[in-house]
Image (cartoon, rainbow, N blue to C red; front, side, top):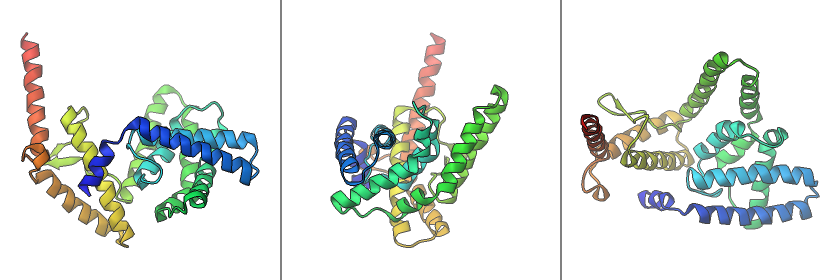
Length: 258
């Protein structure tokens, strides 16, 4: 599993973008030829899916076939809603665009989509509530907006955590992942997050319930933090993080003395 995650971490962003755009062109041709979709709808669907391709390539470093439930949940319920669009109707066609693209993927490649994907696309209530709440923020004063936006973010975090999609904030002994991370800590955090999502999907596909999944993931997470790794020169991830923080503190102190 770690080899698969490492391969994802080293994926070339431009290659992911090029491949995604090629598929989007094929999809657009299919949509116009086989479904009789009007040009305006085609433009909106293409805009939505291009935004998804860009997001997947630049952030989780993956493509539509390999994205996790967390990847798409974050895109739908946070990233895309906050994305400025030339037409507000773009936000309204997100779920239909995703559904249409899945239909094409099955038609073109006989693709077997993960079970969570259909459920997420079908959950119009969750998406429409998130979208309506965010649009309401735009009518608020700056002081009211800040508090309401925090609540909006916390609502999503609660949803993700209820489905075991959030990794723990603590790395041991009351110490948490940093708000500002050094490059080693950031690389380890990204690796840990991908590892968590992969393990979650394996357990979910095996039929485990969320509470069972949560305990299993917590055990694996703790073991990962504490276990020395060859690629870390036989240090554990926690040790690497703490050493980097000590080095950064020393560097900052030296700069202040100068």
